[in-house]
Amino acid sequence: MLTVNRILNKNKGFTLIEVMVVVVLIGIIASSIQFNFFGERPEDVLKKSSYQFAAIFETAADYGMLNNIELGLVINEDNYQFLGYDGVKWSEIAEQDWLTKGQLPSQVEMSLQLDDLPIEEPLLFDSSIIQEKDEDDFSAREKDEKEKKLIPQVYILSGGDITPFSLTFSYNEEASLINDVDDLAYRVSGLYSIPLTIEGPTLDEE
Image (cartoon, rainbow, N blue to C red):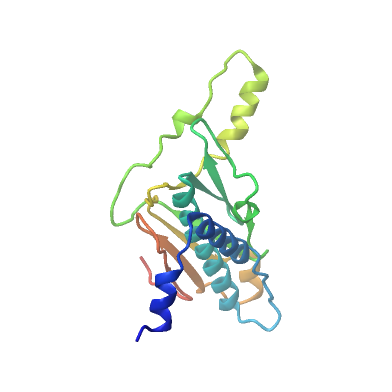
């Protein structure tokens, strides 16, 4: 006698469009998680920030593979943003708000590490190939300067490869002065492919 799962598997499958819709929905849900600090332990705030980032990153990697898009991640101290590569330059991905800038809670900051990883490799993209050159036009040079600021530090290729990286979530100096949180941190690491690994709330000295 066929089980329910076997019957469902036999008679129903998922189209690529359906899978893409699910991926986008997961991304929207992951990016819309709201932080509630009232009554939370300090380590819980860092945990939510790191796990939310990891969920969005892994969903973005799936989105890039399904849509054959090269993605890049720009990391700042208190926010991050995913960009798409159109063959010429990096830019925001239209109609995908969940891939736009992710803002950290005011007292949390990030630090990105690309060096001292187990395997040393050059960047998957040469950033010089996406810098347009127009020495005679001031407006074009000004535009280039803005675009250079959007060059990712971490690359997510459509084939599933990613730049090895380690991203640490910790409390900023202002928060550390108020609370004893210097020893709290979460680290999200990726080594060439997803899934990412998460360590915390305390990290071993390296």
